[in-house]
Each structure stands twice: as structure tokens, then as C-alpha cells.
Length: 304
Image (cartoon, rainbow, N blue to C red; front, side, top):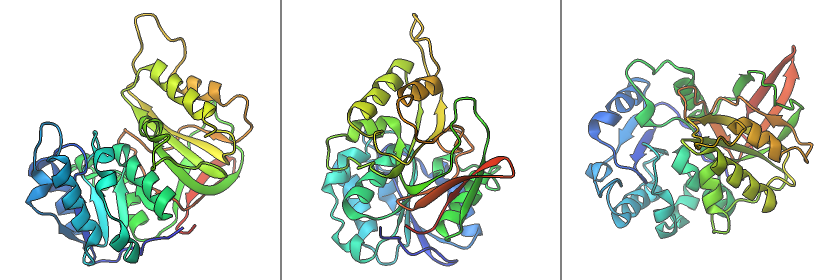
């Protein structure tokens, strides 16, 4: 795996919108916060383009992202929000210059497209982190924000995991892969599909019907994504919906049910996903879980 250079004070973080549109007012707190901790911030007017729900049409979003990939003055690309749209531009991008000067691509949710595409095709690590849309004036001291800075600057990320009745808290280690479950499901069979063999798989999701969670987990199992993993880490499964006739299981129970035939560690309550406690993880780098003082600890390391 290629690990992009970690950032130091004075480096430049570019803001990108590969999916849903955003306004200058929505990124203002994040921009001010980055500047206050010593980073330069770059974007141009294309960041605020609009094409219905998208941040400009596919060509514009791809061209802007391409410029950021190619720029040797940009040290990291922080995607401003998710929504939908990254998959529409990923095949338009040329990563040849990026490979000569790799940089961290940061975000979550729809940005899972980049996490998986870069890990599978370019063997390059990325950061699963909060995004500018989530940054407010009153939360820049949060664990999510601090872990974003720690991830960018190369620190080990250490998290104590809250116990869950469905967890199988056994030690594990391996390369971290995965992201948003809906996006993983949508990428299967595409050039951005991931090989999960001997990897630690992470999943999270938002605003899905429970039967959709079941369908997607069944697909992961039937396609072999669960057959040879080192562990399954489950982040926030937030704002789930049910039908008039109940499905009969929670999202967590659905995940656990599809993992019954396997003996890998299964860890719930991982603090990442669509809730304020969305802490950073390095995708494509080593991650380890272990028991210490009767607590389960996860370290997201800074190497492959």
C-alpha cells in the first residue's frame, strides 16, 4: 500500500464536491477552523456550482477534482459532503499524476467510492473522516474533529469500543477496507469493487429500510465478501426505516444474523458513520483490535 505523506502545519487542504452541491455558508465553519489550526485552504468557484442536486454537472465536477488530483500544491483533498454522485465521475478521472504525488482523499458516505477505487486499483490509503458539512462553530473540539487532525498528521488513532450484546470481541489485525454499506453494494462487479480477502471490513449506513440492509448483507455473503475477512467492524446504522409489516429485526441483528456461520470477530459500536461521533480511520492501513484492562481497544495505525 502507498501511504500519502502526512501533513504538517502550513500544508494545503483543498475542498472538493464530487457529489451533492454545497454553499459557501455551509463550508465557512470548516474553512475557518482549518485556518485556525494552521492549514491553508484552497477551492475555487467551481466548488459551489449547481446542477439540480449535484455540485455541477459530471464534467465540471470531474474537471475540478482532476485539477486537485494533479496539483502538487495540494496536500490533501477533503470532500465537503456526500449524498450521491462520486460514482458518476470516478471513471472520468486520470490518477497518473496523483500516483507520482499521492495525497490524502478524505470523507465518508458517498466518498466510499474513492476509498474503494484507490485501494483496489492504486493500492493507496485514504481517510474515512467527518466532512465540512458536519463542522459547526460549536463542535470543532469534538472527538470527530480532533481525530481528523490526528489522522492527517500521522498519529495513531486509539478508540475504546462500547460493549454491545451482539459483538464477538476477539483480537484481530489487518488492512482496513470498506465504508458505506449501500455504496459497497453498488460497487460490486465494477472496477471499484474491493477484494476483502484477509482484510478487516468496515460498514456503516444511514436512512435505509431494514429489508434493504438484509438484502445488502445477503449480497456481501453470497458474493464471498464475508468468507475470508479478518474481522467485521460495524459503525453507526442510523435512522433505519421499517415497513407497515415489521421486518422483525434491528439493523444490528440483521448484520449479526448474516455473520452467524463465520467465526471472525464482529465488533459493533465502532464510532464512525452518520452520527456526530464520526471518528477518523485510515482505509488501506493496518488496524488492530485487542482487549486491555477489560476494555476493547481499536488502533488505526499509520502504516500498511
